[in-house]
Image (tube, rainbow, N blue to C red; front, side, top):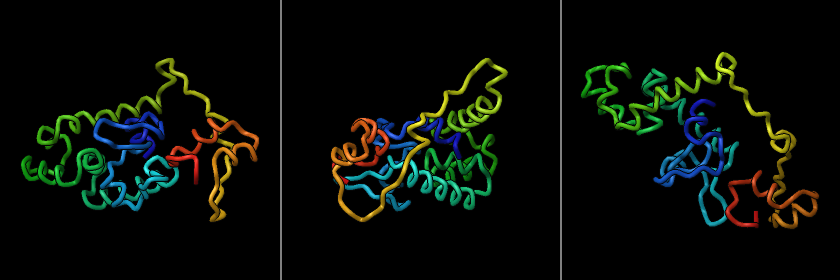
Length: 178
């Protein structure tokens, strides 16, 4: 699962595509809604790292159940299950590599990009690559779910942290009010 997020957004929860897909998993609005993510004036849960990751896991699991093949599930994640079903019919095969030419051009490159990400993240040391260290602000976090309304400026002051840092740790909120 993590390799899909690497290819989709470079692990940036604020990533936005030309087509309006948002977040780590680059959900378009319709897929986000289908997966139960809230999108309104105040919040866009496609940018919520925890909720969107859970939604992506459920969506990819459903795609795998539908196609019984990870390469087809990943292709469907990129171009939609309808396009993959159409490619299966046209190519008369359930093998990604056999039907690849019947998929949209972007999807033809997508599965190999996932495979390349898997390879690089497992064998980076053979290529003199060094992973970035984890931002400690991401490690030491706490969730608030008290059911109350909060102002991010006030919350930052009360927690004695920089407002910009608090905002970056909560990319799902579109306003200063949560």
